[in-house]
Amino acid sequence: MPLPPVQPLFRAQLRSRPANGHTAFIPHIRKLVFEYCDKWPSSANARTYLLNQLQPLARSNPHVEVVVKQRNHKEPVVRGFYINGRDKVVPLNGLEVTGIAKKVDLLLDSSGAKIKPLKRRTVESTAEAARGIWSGLHAEPPRL
Image 1 (spheres, rainbow, N blue to C red):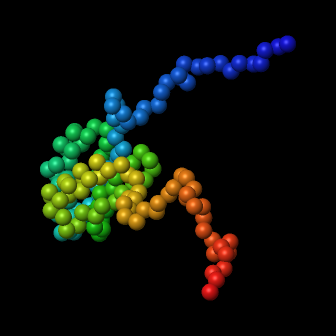
Image 2 (image 1 turned 120 degrees about the vertical axis):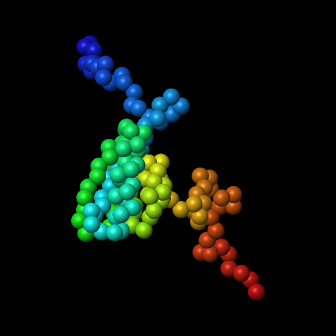
Image 3 (image 1 turned 180 degrees about the vertical axis):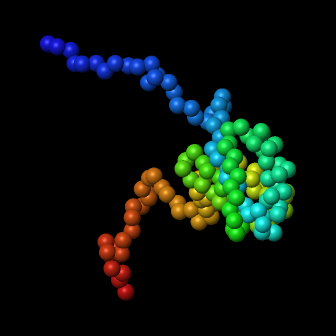
C-alpha cells in the first residue's frame, strides 16, 4: 500500500508573524500626510509647524513616512494612514502650533480603528435565561 504524498515543509513557513506583545511592538500608523496652502492665512500656523517641528517629528518616528503636499486654495489638514487600511483626517485650520502638535500626537498614538461607543452597549448572553423565553402566544389566557 503506497504512502500518501507528503507536502514539503519550507523554512519560510516556520517563521512567526510579528505581533504586538511584551517583546515586540509594531506601530499602527504607517504614513502622515500634511496638506497646506502656501497663500491662505488659515495655513499660517500649519506652515510654522512644518518649518519648525517637522524634522524633529520625522527623526523621532522613523517608522512613519512623512509627506508634505501643497494644496492650493484648500484648508490645511493632516491625514494618518494605518496598517489596517483605514485613514483619519484632522483639519488644522484655526489651531495654534501647539494644538497642531497635539493633533499629530493623537494620530501617532491612534490605532486607526473605528470609534466604538462605550454607552448603550447591548447585553449579550451566552447562556439561555433560567425561565426560558416568555411569549404571549404560549401563555395561558388570564382568568377573570
